[in-house]
Image (cartoon, rainbow, N blue to C red):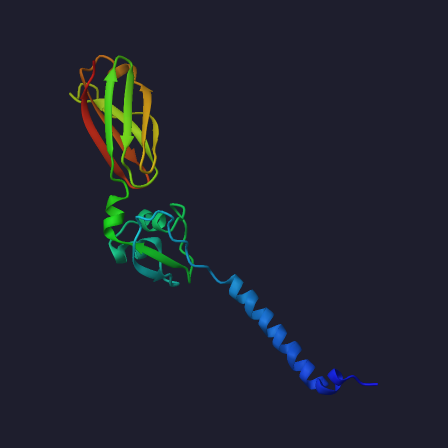
Length: 194
């Protein structure tokens, strides 16, 4: 005895439904394999001036040069690591130049007393890592000495204390610089050594 359902749904219609379901599953697998757009930065100070979809011929340099930015600025705006290879089809947020220029604004102060150098970093828009370097201002002892690293928090302040190199202990004035390797930006100040 045939049910009403079997009478209505004949075999050719069942085959078409099965093929449609197979095609739908294949399309969803293809869509999942496509590159996904880059995530916008969680930092609300980032404004996208443009959206750039990566083409096969694009490199980090060609993308950055096209918008007058450095690659690290684009990577930071998209929450990407510093050295990712752009993926074809990926959509990148191209930040405004104002955001890129201000990404590492902030202040650094330093003091040197005896064997200790104290460095304070504050007011930066984003979290950033800086190398702390010091040298003799007068030039009697040549070259910078790396004394450590400091992590400047976003919208906060941090202080680090470092040992001065023995070659600089008797120098009356010192030049202290913090250099951000990612942005190739340095902030320097001359201080007395007491």
